[in-house]
Length: 128
Image 1: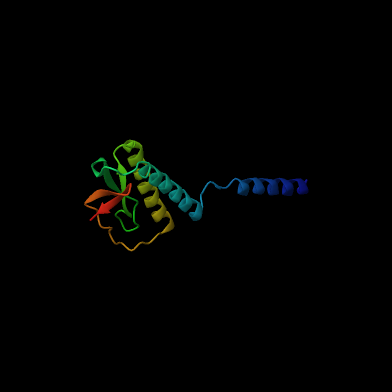
Image 2 (image 1 turned 135 degrees about the vertical axis):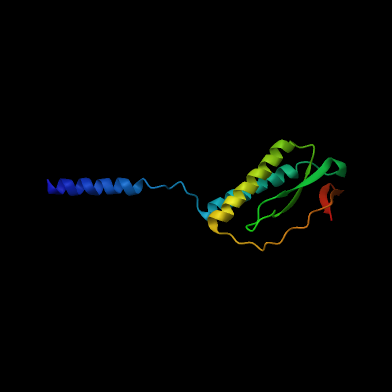
């Protein structure tokens, strides 16, 4: 009977400790998710050739640990801007949460905001 109690206790302990929360992503996995999301953003931003700068604009993206954007990205007004800007917002929030969760530090510098978008050889470039 004593062996059965010990076996039962050990069985319950194994079950208890194996049911822990293993859904947490590692820092590396979360960073990879951020990289993947930004790749999607870049793909959308670069899906149109820049031939008429009046059809282009820009927005800030990302979130530095001490506040403010990481940079700016140009995009065509001819893409699905609603989806594009939603991904931009998702990326900002995800990067903010990543920075807080993992105690990320940054240089706290602010990127220079472009004054407009120009088209050069089919690519969007910023004028400052």
